[in-house]
Length: 370
Image (cartoon, rainbow, N blue to C red):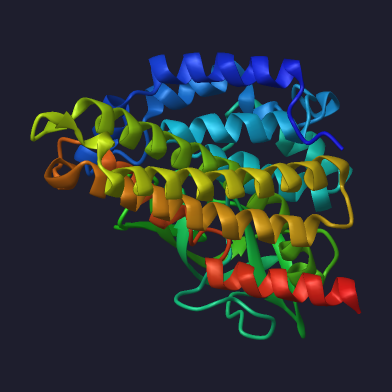
């Protein structure tokens, strides 16, 4: 079985890399980091929207390009390499996939074309504070077609136009779609370790909501959405981890100490080798996840969990060792190492922490072996 990408997909990757290296540089990322009033880089966002990438995995009948999930994985990796300060993942990985998975035909026809053309920015609002969201402990409630409650933190919640929200619905939980530009919704930006991806508290007070999928099926749908997003996030993490290794390797060849490049020292060689091994393990698991995602295989839950765990570990390790390889320079504001460390820490807790995904992986394997 060949898990590698096709020639067309590799061409897409190469072209996406050229475009992003020119249009989404470190300066574009730092512009958001340095300005407290910027939630994202709107110039970069408009250029990405213009490339049509938001519609890569959206069928043509809903205004997308109809390429497929593998192409979206390729794009995700390239966005991760440049730390794109845009709400791409919230719209394409979560909101669009939720619609594709559980939306009615009317919802798909109305909303997916807007996701594809960038006029709609989507997000997913699940968390209600510290700890894992589980069945029975959701406080935000649905009643009479409206919802009331609070979600915190919501990635890109300050700039999103629509949200998929997990709510208490009678004795169970459901997912609903909420237009965030209405009087029953209030938002407050919150500060995080990674300001180039904005977050917010969203409060609902009698906000109109439309059911997504079947009533009471929210937790099951959320698991499926997270499995799909996990693979895409793993590719974004893989892109960042790969760039960290490249940065460390380049610096090790250039930095001279005591008359020789530091890359000749055994300690540095071991750092680079360990980064490479973890990245390759992450890549293998990400490719397995991409296959399961694109083919809708029964193995998707375990493949997604494995990809998520391996990618989170690889990105955190690579970002940390990149700083260490740069030595005293690595800790400075001027060097870009900390930008990747911030993003690594953020992505590791999106859609659940590594501990949550490890538990999911064990559960999936146990279920498979029963």
